[in-house]
Length: 304
Image 1: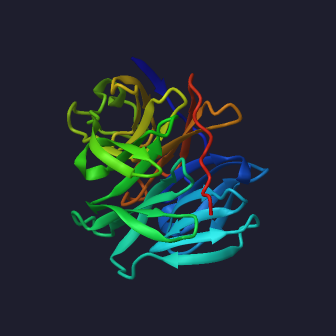
Image 2: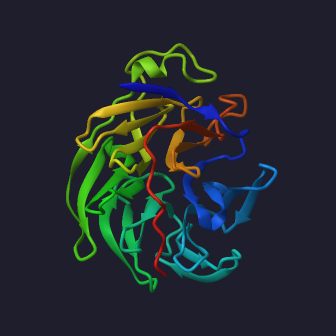
């Protein structure tokens, strides 16, 4: 098994970093400061540009004809190529539920999930948004809907409902959507990688940290990279579920990951300092990266 260490790429620019996405449409990497309602992209001077879209910015993906689809607090927002709002659709009215993570399927539809602010069990839903912005629930009784990504041939979809402690895999087709759910892996924290890996840690006790699968991405070999929130790790699992690589991150709340760079071989990792005191984990909220051997897949674009 390979063990890698991610390097801190930025200062602690965000409170709750999430949803990294590499796309030529916006010149490289975008990620979100979710609870600030901001989308971040790098500027020419390597300082972030912030695009404020509302109370929550949960997920952003490119549109096929330019612009973005953005999951905002209770719906989705379309922007044009200049970032100007074009149309917004609300999926629910309850102030107790907000959007969380999502991704674009091979047919150009947008799958986006929700969660309750109080994380109440079974209160969330995974939705499918079509190019005409009609939407439907596709998975109910979810608690914290997190990463979703597809295999290189589009026949499988990997998905995290974080409190289950598992990464699920579905069969997927444009005609039938998600079906035949089963467990892909149940991640376990790598104790050897965790011990001494965090930038300000107390003495690490093996088995003391839960593996909370958060955001994920799939590479061109069909392997699944999963951020383990609370563990300061990203794991790479081969298509048969074998753990192949463990990446140590210097902040425990690792939230999501994506493969980008010109050759799609840089793994970008977002972190969060949500609920942390100011004097704890000073590197939390930073963006991390590490070079890897296998490239990622081009980001799928929303067809609307």
